[in-house]
Image (cartoon, rainbow, N blue to C red):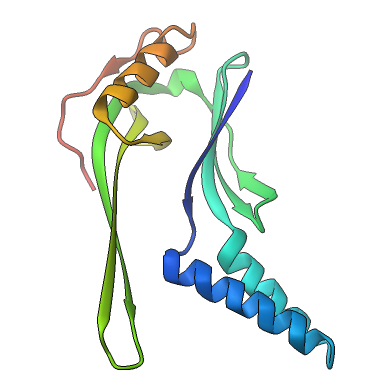
Length: 160
């Protein structure tokens, strides 16, 4: 069973909106010139690309990926045996956009993230949640896997 978790868009909310505007402009310009294809493709990258994680429970592998255009997944498979502990932490992301009147708009997104950490410092974010309880429940379900049964929860502070 392969679990697919979508994590974040590669650009913030303003970037996604800009991507859709570029795609619309590309469709319009495409009726006049093939240069509209450049606008269409750049808008598709901005608005449709995202990051995620694939977890293969049967093979015992995990793959963080970048999905270009929302369909082409690029990433590397890691064996779950190289990871030593789970970590649950609070994540806060701030997206800033400026208007034409130079008014700053900050959009803050907060969530709880579950990651596995390796002995060599490798970190893979498995999923994001709205509460610590949901993250703990998912962690306990993952610990039932034979590949992740030896992992423990880390209480160390998060290093950036």
